[in-house]
Image (tube, rainbow, N blue to C red; front, side):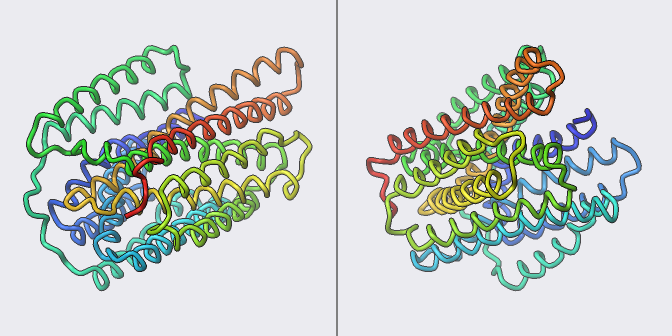
Length: 425
């Protein structure tokens, strides 16, 4: 990956991951419908700027603004769902529909991205957001009733600065670890700064009257287990996407469009997972929903660890997509519903913590597993000179098996966290 392409991804991740908690609190402050409209409008304008970019600086600026407005938009969506559908039966259906829409849109996005890149121009990957945002804004305007700002909500300026700086430093550190290595000064410095600043953030949150992230949100057993599950899911999910994209295009020789279509079983599995878990949300114990989902993803990653160099799509890749999608839908719907239920004035920031956990997990997983895969591949290549493809696949195999083991341990940790007193309300 070129430096420029890497920064297109990293700059968005910095804005999005760093500002999610602030976006959640601002949603409570200005009202959820208003924050939805601001987020959609800002994201659309940033997309238009990116599509019209004349140089890298203009593109990077657009991606940064996409991250900023995305960080306002996502917590508002989750908070609006939680507030609009408080009854158990309605809530399960609402979060099930939300998960289905997110799953189908992710699959269609992969296919659409391949079509736009192959037959039009990369700029259309930006411009396509404009009509989507327009439809979403119209739906928000007519379907979401305006609600006045939550009473008693104040802006924790110190907490916002600390959280944003700390989270951005972590995301940057993981991104630089992928490109520069874990021993690079910028990697060590960024990660150390991120941990230090977030430690100060926790201390500040304990001592002020109106914290950005009240510690009661993350110390709740159900919510804490949900955040851990989503972070772990992101490690495995993004490993799957990264490794199989390489395998489909560089080993099996798929075009971007064909590779996008090949990803559709992931979406099908996700939608099936959503349909299975939605009716259980309000009556099953949290651990009994999160742990099987994590173990299903682990099973998919274990199969990915066995994919051969001269494998085929249906016997080797299809089952991986199906299992990982199934487990992802299972975990995400459960975590989003559990994190926001009964949160009161903290609903938006509790939902924002789900996406923050996912962003940190994705950054960590991409950096850590790509490092493992690269190291194993380099060792294999030294032992078998000239076997570049075999070395790369072997590296991915080992990293995938490692990710499967990590998710099994994560499932155990989630059980220990939520197994006692972790029943759904």
